[in-house]
Length: 153
Image 1 (cartoon, rainbow, N blue to C red):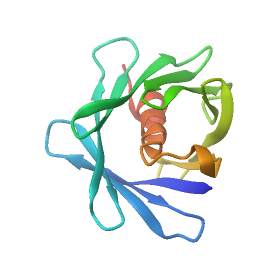
Image 2 (cartoon, rainbow, N blue to C red; image 1 turned 135 degrees about the horizontal axis):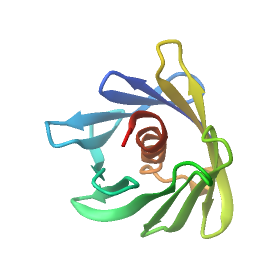
Image 3 (tube, rainbow, N blue to C red; image 1 turned 135 degrees about the vertical axis):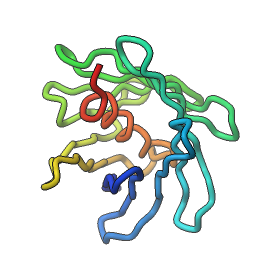
């Protein structure tokens, strides 16, 4: 499966290879929460972020309960994020902050690649094994965006 996570102002659209919008990720109010909606407008997940530490962290919530907790482990020498949740342990690791290999429980499941856009934003291409896909995983591209492209500390 290939998905494209494309920023548009304060939201992201998640499209399939045919350009169909599968999900929309929108900012909720002034609190910095992001919500993931399916194509029919049903709210599936919420993500909160914490930028108070040296490395940002993110909580992906399902029904206001923690589902996957993501933490940026390194931003420069060994760019990586780690996610711990109901589905196991996820790692997003890169050598160049552009191509991130995605593993779950130490098994390769796909990749996320950052691609520069004309106006300076970055869009993401997520390739993932169909059997390993979870609706919350497009948030991983948003975590990469905030950790390596939008977030400045």
